[in-house]
Length: 83
Figure 1: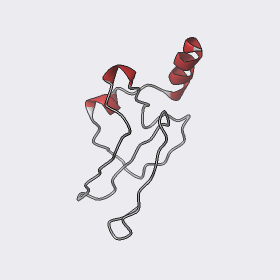
Figure 2 (figure 1 turned 180 degrees about the vertical axis):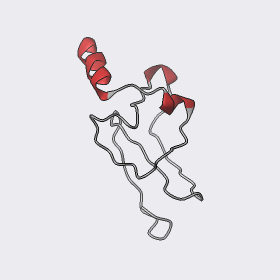
Figure 3 (figure 1 turned 135 degrees about the vertical axis):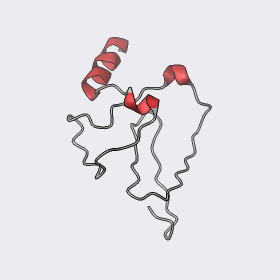
Figure 4 (figure 1 turned 120 degrees about the vertical axis):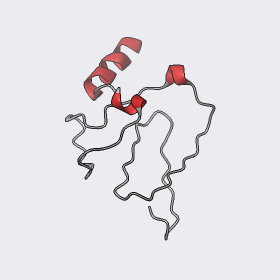
């Protein structure tokens, strides 16, 4: 995905997604298929070792929501309790 190729990425509803900028001059836009519902929102901790993602950023600037994310193992427990 780049400014030059103008491609987009479709992420299905309910699928975890995240992004990281490795330059200082970034504008990130996204579209959704419904109204935002804070009560239904979950946030995974970006640096959870179980996810194994190498973000290429040493000291990321996180939003308060992202800084308070839960581990993937906690998400699995929550989903199991709901089923």
